[in-house]
Image (tube, rainbow, N blue to C red; front, side):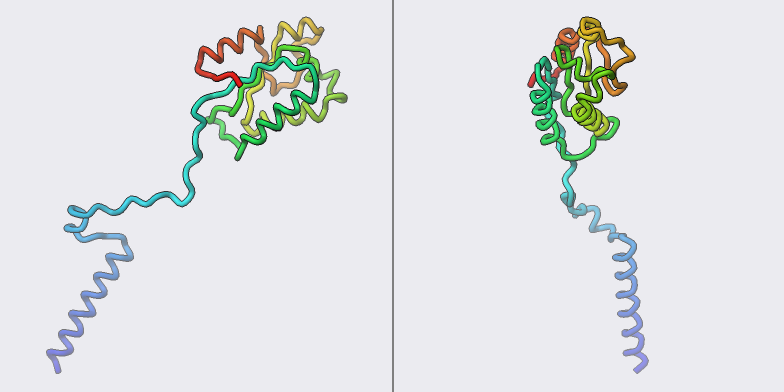
Amino acid sequence: MLRNLLILVVVALGFWLAAQRLLTGEQAPTETATNPPPVLEPIVPPPSRQPRNLVADISVHTEQELDILFTRVEQLLDRPRSENEAPLVSIVLHGPEVAFFAVQNYAKYKGLVDRAAKLAALGAVDISICQTQMRNLGIATDQVPSFLRQVPYGPGEVERLLENGFVSM
């Protein structure tokens, strides 16, 4: 009887040690040397990176044309972008559409300007506006919203982006 009790204690001790190893994540030394733990695929795949940055060289004549562009960007946007992520599209405004973003025209183009500001805040777009065209239209540098990045010459900015690996859309 004492022998059976001793066997029971040894077996119980063995189960207890095995359970401790499982709970603490320890593995036997022979297991780690011969069989590395399996690599598990993540449940949620990491966000895929755009293979290339896009630049939109914008010279549109109507509010509807710019609205179509913003709709396309919204279709590409699957989540807000973090601060260290590049925007989906870099937009360069250097035609008559520059007037849409003048502060004095905000009441007329409020929906369009607010939509552009939202896309910029989400990190979907980086919007540049041409100071040369602003001067041609009589718009001072302090008369456009602050989310617009002012560049000296719009076509030059498009060339710079293309030289830096952007693809025209």
